[in-house]
Amino acid sequence: MAQRPLLKADRWAKLLDPPSDEETLIRHYTLGQADLDLIRAKATAHNQLGLAIQLCLMRNLGRSWRHDEVPPAALVTFIAHQIDVPSIALREYGRRRQNRREHALEVQRHLGLRQPDKHDLRASPLHLKPPMRRITGSRLPRRYSPH
Image (cartoon, rainbow, N blue to C red; front, side):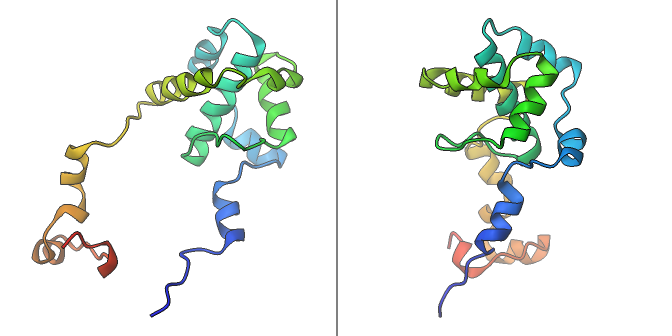
């Protein structure tokens, strides 16, 4: 049996691509005081802007900034304006790859996130044996079953 993709490419883009319209930016990408304190602790404008963009993507899209990704200009401008740095500063960000990794971890801590571990798997319906899945109401496709 042929497998169909879960979603078509345009639907994935709608879910995972950063927005560029003003209404969505205002609603979901306005930084709070705790965010601003974290961002302003960085010494350079490009690190402040890079960290702020990482924070916004993780909080609102649930994902990190992809290595090859160029955020929409409207998003960069909106965030840069909030932290009072020029949006052109983003050109300098990421020249040192370690900064991006460190900032991603810093954002995760700030948001109270962490990497899943083996204890999380045990709490997942994927870990339950088939009879227990029926009891808990978990409905998983057969191909995801660990047994």
